[in-house]
Length: 161
Image (cartoon, rainbow, N blue to C red; front, side, top):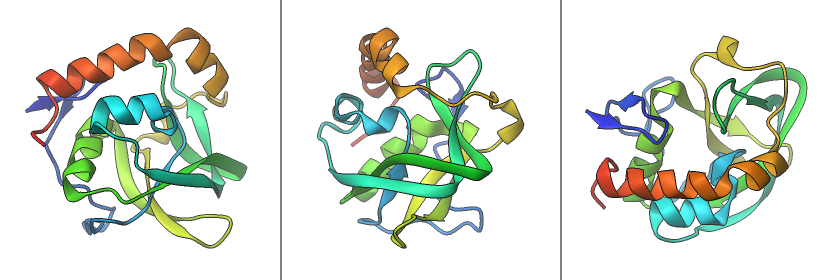
């Protein structure tokens, strides 16, 4: 059993959507939280994949009480802003899946511009705060320490490249 960056155990699962379909290598990943930061991607993957600004309607990046990272939860009037990452290898999908851990489920999403991608959404939306996650606050108060946690997780518990 591996341990995610948040300290929870992960099952070493292959990235799959709710129907058990795994995204193919090269498919796009919508990110809305810590994975928007090139420094975090570099700490986890050893590189920064290509990305472009993206939005998904009907969702929001919610603050998660007691954590510095958000969860994506349904929000009928909301729009989550983030990035669409492309060019991920199968090995990188495995790293990100273990990084996200059991707190998230991988699901297909449609972006506001009709592009499609995958997103890690909350497995338990009730755990989210009513407040939105604040990326600026994350950078100002937590990014440096979080980078150390990511690098440590990758070195000790992350999947083999």
